[in-house]
Length: 152
Image (tube, rainbow, N blue to C red; front, side):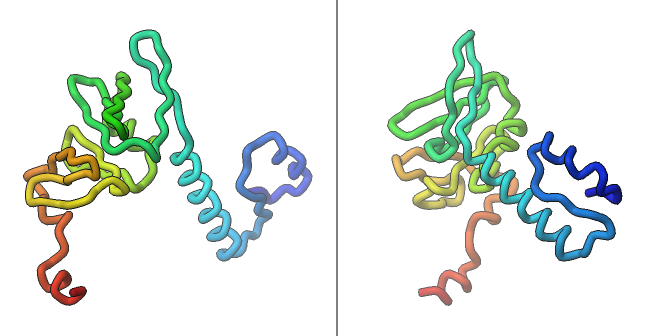
């Protein structure tokens, strides 16, 4: 965003979302903001590299079923029992993953694309894996009984 049109050529040196000239209309700003959020979502879908014991591994978010944190090591659990480890805090991992990943426990992120069932204490994934739900807020993952009956 600028009030100085003479600097417009400098925009080509950046990975920009758009170019807004002051005064900015509310709709223009809203559109640019939504494009930026879309790009962020797209970036979180992209594979990324992590490192563990002098080896780099590629993590593909679409193939990660859940992430577990053990003793400062994040373990990306994928299909076919694959696992990739890296030294990362779970909160940092969550920032790199798409919004379909949810922190359901202090030590776990779950990918809702792989959730087959939800019990009182855990998520049951498509391969039968059970990922625990924090005992502090188990109700947040269950629809109210009235909503379930209404949909039947």
